[in-house]
Image 1 (tube, rainbow, N blue to C red):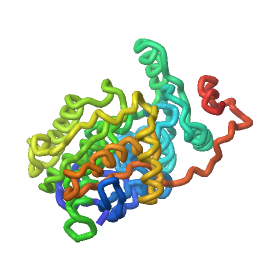
Image 2: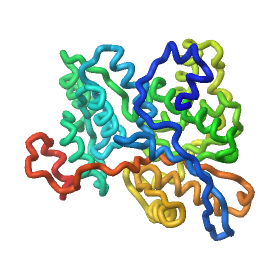
Image 3: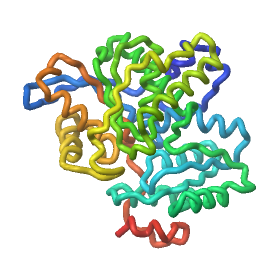
Image 4: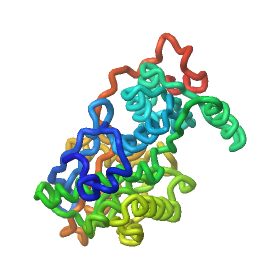
Length: 352
């Protein structure tokens, strides 16, 4: 069974179709971890393996979002992100797989090692790349120019509308089934990177729907104007309200039943910025757990987990890390392409 939400709520499934893009369920495992206070055990949810074309947390959201675009007879989808955005790239890849063109409006970010290969993948995928910057008024003008008179469906940054959140309500029910079948124990805490909030919001709602007393630690990796406790609350309430409208058997007060801890202490000074703690977490995850993480999202979530699990008062607490970073290698290199005619001049700096 790959759609646990549909199995549990068939009326919802009939009212809320999705395109099957992901290879589900993703695996879980329990692994040893050495800390300064002795050996611990942590569980891993391998959402890095969600899809053959591209993995990570965006695929679950895109199953619902691209279905809606198809239902609206769109010819093209558009979305937002930074230059190395996993969401923008995943949207482009999976939109093309179902015959939709894609426009990505991209903001500048700090240089990261994966930025050149992400841009090269966009070029191979024939994504329409549009740089976005300047004042808010200029940004709106750019968006209007891109969207005017086109059969286009707009997907929000990170895919984090209520519709995208549903993908992780389903994901949490998938984890609940894996717990029930004995594949993994019930963790006391679940750690996940918190960017545009959709992933953490959906997991928290899904665990509440499954009546599992797991505390979701949402580790903020974006600026506060993107992710904040009030905004997270609004997103969860909106999602719960819409699910209840589509299927009255889903509690309207589901957001009130969630167990969520908003973590601010691992931001490392800015989006795509890093620090010694984050780099150490990435190295530890690779050496001890065999995980390939990065310093923008998953490294910061792992840093929070490692900070907590090393404390002696948590010796008896069980923890789960939800890996949201795609492990699928891109079929392109990181070299500057010979033909840069389809690449905005503003993005050439990422090859320096």
